[in-house]
Length: 253
Image: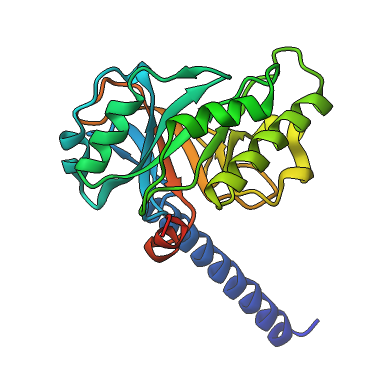
């Protein structure tokens, strides 16, 4: 091989090494400067920063809430825009703080949504009636939510049948498609494609960028240990998968 040709090859290789090194450095710099999660000390947790609409969900387990402090809290560029509130459970129980939370959240201008904790061993229709008897949706409210997390030993076909009863009954009553709340594994193992037509609020904690689920989703519960002014520590944090315009379009007209 001639010396000139060999020299040109060495220069090309060296140039490629330099380019790849610079590209790698740029990638790592971008990753560290644009992380998926940023720790916010006031909230006590890492927040996924690629989302603009943030919120929480609560029940009587959070005790009596000072909703004015919740609404007023803003840390840098993040404030809490919405809250899902537990309304009912099973065929006859209403959350003991639902009426207060539902009223106070509205008074301070918080976008609110109500959810039902589903018991798969009970009638889906009867549980829907329990929810409908407790929850009056008004303009500006989020769609109703079915929270399904446990099997209690019930067979999968029976779970699906009763969940569908609840969803069909609630949709017919409120004239809006309900949201399903569950975790990634439960959806995959016990619900599946039959329910892909329903909006999904998925629980999956401490993921790098988004929940690990193949289907689309609209809400992501990413942490269960947050801090919020006016609430005892240990608050569930959520993000909406879209911008403020898409979020407003989801609300009851």
